[in-house]
Length: 421
Image (cartoon, rainbow, N blue to C red; front, side):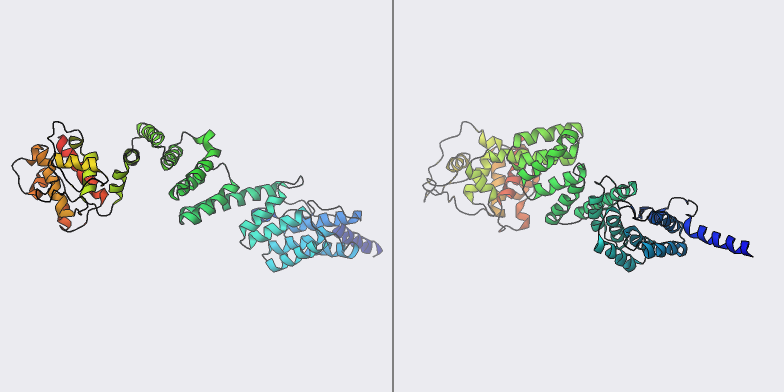
């Protein structure tokens, strides 16, 4: 009987003193619930270390009953041992009891802090679906010498998750909000090309060309040959008024990858380049919402080559009301070729008179006839003349409709093409 009692007592002591068998490493979320001793101080009592080792192995094995027995022993002998207090957070997190985990972490925080405490607070943030808070906490952990591999793995996972979410949200939001989200994403991954290019595109849309150029700098050494990067550089050049550089870039892109969008944008920049070198009266005429006869004469001169380079013209009749008018020379050319007429009695050409849709139809037909367009032969009606030359009739929208400078320029480009055939 005495021998049996001694044996039972020895078994009981072995049960509390010896650690359980080593278990397989935890999987899933539990693998990020690191050993609460990471970064902490060693216990004062050597037996505490052995007892906690047993407790932790039981926690990893999922045996909380035996784990708590060991933790109770530690509280009785060394109540200030922080890893034993933090182990309660590990147990609670594994059971998804988040309030208990928070209370355990707070109790440890009240007495001190070390790496494992920060990791558990970050893991609690993960469990509470606060990835950005978890990321910020882990960012402070992974730079430490005692940071475990699991912490670095979790940090990398959170980094990708937050980066991907920011980039996704930026693609779906308005420009100002998108810029903020993209900048935030790039603080996480400054070398990422796609969000940086999108940021530059958003800045170009806001006409922040200098800032857009600065944002491209970090990837020019590694991604300068990418089509979207060259396109962004071309748009920045165009926005800064460096049209020739932008044209060269788009021409290179078009040769490399023929693309309707590149071709269309290239033509637009060429037009901008041409317009930038035009005299002020041309700019004024192009921007007008309702052109007058002077605006029309200016656009006619610069848009229709056979008018601009016409030779052997007779002396035009004198108009007394064009002395101070912008585009005086263009008006004189329009009078000389017979497109604009001077009143024989008043000697006025009325440069400020508006040109509506009906008037520009008549003027366009007169140009085609005066400059000898083959398609205009045998037609006297202005609408039929334009139809015969394949030119859309502005008057179809209503004869009294005002004509903008850009609409007039587009019509005159059609006239120029008809004369060139």
